[in-house]
Structure formats: structure tokens, C-alpha cells
Image 1 (cartoon, rainbow, N blue to C red):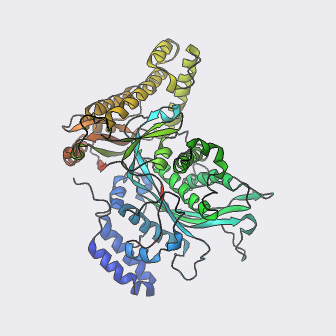
Image 2 (image 1 turned 180 degrees about the vertical axis):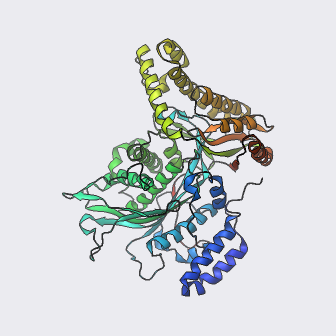
Image 3 (image 1 turned 60 degrees about the vertical axis):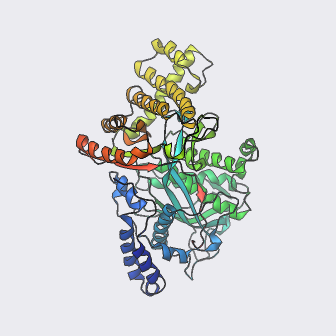
Length: 558
């Protein structure tokens, strides 16, 4: 099975789109929608968006009818050069993947909010912005970020894009003068309805936005509202509040363990920063975190990336009911093209690691000898996954309490050694013992993996990945039959260095380090053998480290 090429678009659909976008479509709006649907269907058979929808087809949220998406040529003529975010923020040329998500988000915006950036009645005082943040795959270091451990993730080529318009408005001018309240409105391609919310203003002060009950069909909006709440302190000294309309499109499969939620949070955060930066020359965003920013020694981009991750983590923990660690938001925010990040979740700092890129390695790894990362979606997600996560967090807390009774100097499981765990074994139950054992040994494996991957010792890297999976299966108990089958198939395939469960567990994805020449055959083999063993379909893709959160200049594409 060949991996679909990112951004491949049929030439005929582009020609048709150009013809209609410059003439008849503007005269016949109803035909415009039908044409866009035809173009989307033509493009999706070879597009990453189609691939991602299929990749996540087992999840309920992906079974909804996708919104119409307008063709790339029509989108080009609609974008305003004035919407470019502040040049000091991290920008990147628009990729094929981002362009396709932008097409989807643009048409979703128009069909939901009834306005586009090229409409004559558009309020030009509201600038247009676009932001994007990736999902991630963790090579090793699982279930240790919420205990201050070491993790080793990288960003992938799938992400979440926010497109819309917004600005800061005075608290006293929340009405447009005609009785309508200027709200914050958001629509997602994965949801049926738009959600609106408005900051509560009492005695001139803005209070936190209220979130939806976690069982509400609109609970997905809590990820957005929670992030907005974490940026309100930047406006605390001003008579200003956020006002925006945003359409969200993404291709990270929901529930796959590839951090679709963190990708959403970080993309929303980057969008808000565009609004803040436009107001006061790059000084307003993170203005409430100046003391924290000082420790980054003038590296503003690094400081912003880390503080953004912390704000998004706080949003998910506080407003979405997930006691998550920092890894997912961190790598989505701070990832660098071509590098895996070794993240220290206690100091909240990171080191960029290039695969086979250690200058002291003898001999250096040739480009053609570098392995590739294969992610395989089991397309299963067991019902106990959500409830087991907070249970594991509590078990780790219990383990720490037990270890501190033996040695008070152990302030976190990150500080514990295997000998500490063995010394406390007689005072804790078997489950708590095994949870602590996993965390301690996984931290050791992650540090060893950094050395192995950077020096080109891929065989050792693979052995560490295999050992990590065994620990997650036996000691942390977050695997399942389908994942174990995928891992066993991978570990027995010639050309695979190592394979393991990645993400929270109980389904989701595996990650494998594979020789480049074996990648295509390996994915074909997995698909056939997994079907034979489970009667289920799995979907694989090949990836290498991608970049983190960024703003996308909205100007005519070249």
C-alpha cells in the first residue's frame, strides 16, 4: 500500500475551479456550492485530508458529513494580504496540507457565518488570520509526563487549522450599535453546529468564560473556551475583550492517541496571539507572563512556545476534565522541523535531537540509511480508555506517597530509582508497585533512547522501544489485544528496529522505527496480517519530524 502523497491535487479540478471562480460561480452561488463539492470529491481520493478521514473512520466524530470545501484557486482570490500576522511571530510558507485544510475552513466559515474576506459588506475593521498546530507521535517515554519525567515526541504532518477574523474590542462596545452582541463564535468541521460565547463583564472586569457540561454535545467547545480563558489575563489592565469568528478544520484522527485535542488547543492559542500581536506591536501576548519569560534569556520564540504549551495544558486540565501532562501541548507548540524533542517535564525545557545527526557519531549516518517512522492506527478505542487515565494518575500519586515514606527526599517519581521502588515493594500493593516500576524504567529508557537515536544506533533504539511496550503492557496495563497484535507483527518483520504502543493506550496507534527500504512492504504486511488476525482494518502512514505551531500568512499563494 503506497502512502498517499501530501497535497497531491488533480490537475483537472484546478482548471475547472479557475474557470468557475473567475466567472459563473460569482453569478450563481447555488452552483458554486455544488461545484466545490465536486472538486472536493475529485481531490480527496489522493489528498491527505481524505486519507486522514479514512484513518480515523472508526471514531464517531468522523462519521459526520464533512463540510463543503472550496477549491484552492477560489480561495486564493478571496484572501487578504492585510491578514498577515505580525512578522515577528513564527511563520512558515503554506504547505499543501495546510492549503487543503484552509480551503475546507474557508468554505466552512462562509457557509456558517455568511461572510467571506472578499465580500463587499465585510467589516474591514476585523482582520483575517490563520493558524495551525500539529498532532504528535511519541517515540518513547509514555505515561511519565504527568510525573515530571522525560518524553521523546515529534510533531507529525497532520494538524488543526484555525481560520477567521477577530480583534480586541472595548468592553463597553460589545454591541455593534444595532442591538446585536458581538460574540466569539466558533465552528468545527467535525461538529454540526456553531458555538458562541461572550465574556462576562461585571463591575468593569472580565470574568472567566463559562464552559459546557462535559456531557453536553457542545463540550468540544470547552477546548476553545479554556484556551481563551488562559489568555484573558493579558487583557487584565485594558478595557478590551476578544471578539472573533473562527472556523476549525483538522486531519488528526480523533481518539487515535495522536493528540488531536492538543493540536486544537495550540492552534486556537496561536490564533489568539495573532489578535493580541496586531493590537500592540507584539507586546500584548504573554504580557501577564513577563516574569516567566525572563528565564529564557532573550529567546522570545522559545519562551512563547513553552508558555503557550503551559496555558493550553492548564486549559485542558481545568476546563476539559483531563489531568494531562505537558507533553502533547509542548511538542505541538515547540516542535522543530527535522528534530525529535527530548522534553524534561519537570523543568519544562527541551533539547532538539536530530535522527542520526550527532556530529561526534562515527561514522555519520548517511541520509539514505536513516530510518523512517511508521504510525499505524488500530482503529479501535476501548470504552475504558477515558476512565483509566485519571486512575493511572492517582496510582502514580499513591506510589509517590509510598516511596516518600521510605525516602522523604523523593519529591516526584522522576527522582526515584528502581532500587527505591524495590525497597518500598513490601509496603505497597502489586499494582502500585508495577505502576512505579514502569515510570522509573521508562525514564531510564527515554534518556538512553536520546543517545541511541542521535548517534545512529537504531538497533538499540528499537530494543528500547520494544522494552517500553512490554512495560506498558505488563506493568502499566494500558495496551489491548489489537495493539499487541500490531506490535508483535511489527517486531517480527525484517527491517523493523522496534515497535510500541504510542499515546494513552487501550487502542489508538503504534509507532515503529523502520528501515527506509522496508517501509512500503511493512505497511502492506501490517494491513493484511492485522485483517487476518482481527477482521479489522488498520491504516498506516510514514512520517518524519515536522514543525510546531505557526501562523500562516493569508496572501495570494505563489
